[in-house]
Length: 226
Image 1: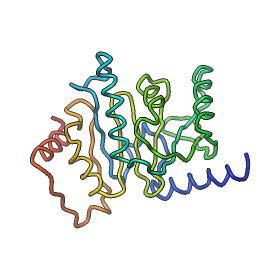
Image 2: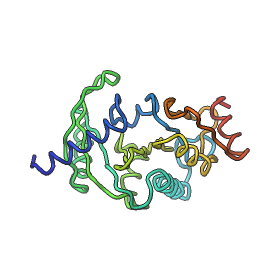
Image 3: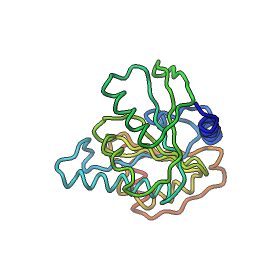
């Protein structure tokens, strides 16, 4: 590994630990993290996990992009993050290698997750988020050809993590998260879709939110599970 890439990876780990201490960059585990401002948006109708036709598939990709831009910001400098474990089969490894090459990703941080009982290697690249620039990755995510790809805004740690039928997102402050929810409350999951809404308790002291009644109703349904 060249000195330049070593510095780059050190910067990622430093950034991640600064914004998200005490947790690993594993997208599937972030919803369980403490002390973060995060929620989930479900991007398919009626809690469905799969698209019904091509029109819905195109709409899903558009919604992925909409949420990525709303969460990160157009042209925002981000870390593109992939994690790789040694239990991947040959087909998955080949697919990952193509992605690494496409984005000139570098390996760095290695850790063991006791929750998964797996060792991981983190691969990262500095990119700028642009709408429709990462559609191939989003399509592969929907088809579950890849897992745990996420984008983290370099300036403040905001996270965009797409999964098959939706996205998990985080924002640096409770107000920033509630502003995002106020714009897209119609995409909050309904009962049974695994939704959540979490705020960093240390940042919530003295904070009051003002939202529209439809937004408040959507949040209440999410919190109550119905």
